[in-house]
Length: 150
Image 1 (cartoon, rainbow, N blue to C red):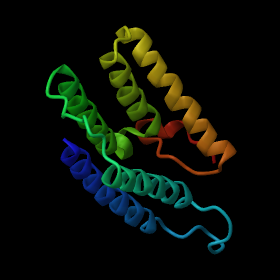
Image 2 (tube, rainbow, N blue to C red):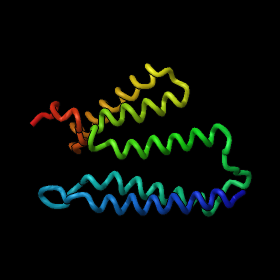
Image 3 (cartoon, rainbow, N blue to C red):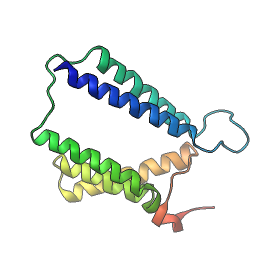
Image 4 (cartoon, rainbow, N blue to C red):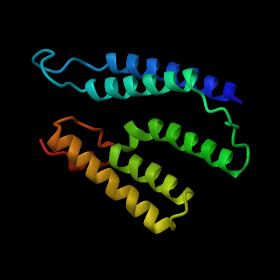
């Protein structure tokens, strides 16, 4: 079943290339391209994903089988949640869309709905604050744009 890992590795390389290309579409920061810009983190993620994908292609797991049971269904749900997350990121903003995505994924992994969505809300706020204030990288506020500090 090494073929499954190799197919998955090729698909992940395509995703890494698309992700890296998407990072090139970010607008250039004001004042030139000095230092770390908004594209740096996506470039790093694309590179790690590409290297990991190559590992899957070169050294696949010999006993790997696709999880067509409940695990496979949960994986498909997780992919669907992440796709919806990307679609909601601009209109709802980072905090609300992260609350929904992380909360749903935590709930699917067995947390109670209240704990899951509280975790999603805390994750959304903490990551937003880190990116906005510590890294000085703006994330979309969406529906919460009234919180924006000028």
